[in-house]
Length: 199
Image 1 (cartoon, one colour):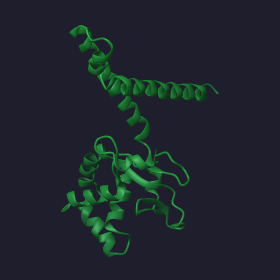
Image 2: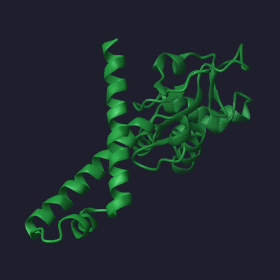
Image 3: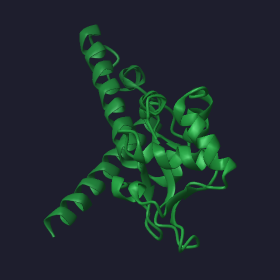
Image 4: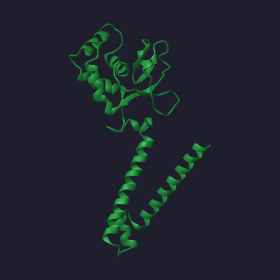
């Protein structure tokens, strides 16, 4: 019960502080300059500069707290940009394919498609999780939170990546994970590793 009570208390106090802050801004204006004009017109410049700094730090802390809370949300992660959010696995595979032309790996992926063993981008998507050191994450069916996917899944020959889903060939209608993605900041590293991958 202790973690629950701490989370409840923290959330309640955070919302209370936010409500008080908004009420003050609605009454006296937004920012310490407006507050001074309405509450303490003779405040010294040193105190005013200090208040400005406190105001900026508090705002930055609030934004960081919001990003930390929502960055793993599947609905938010799709529009968060580098370096904070995720890039869908299909988009990462497409970019990797474009940037690894004339490499051994690209030739192998093209050959797989010609032989009917999956698509080029499907091969790239799977091997982003299998042949690179970056971690692919996804969301389990009926769950909300994103989690890292074990490398063991990608090493399984019967596992495929298709349309952003991690599926087993014997049960393609029941994905193991949905909304596969990697962190945007890891994409360049993954591409460099694919350039030197030996299949």
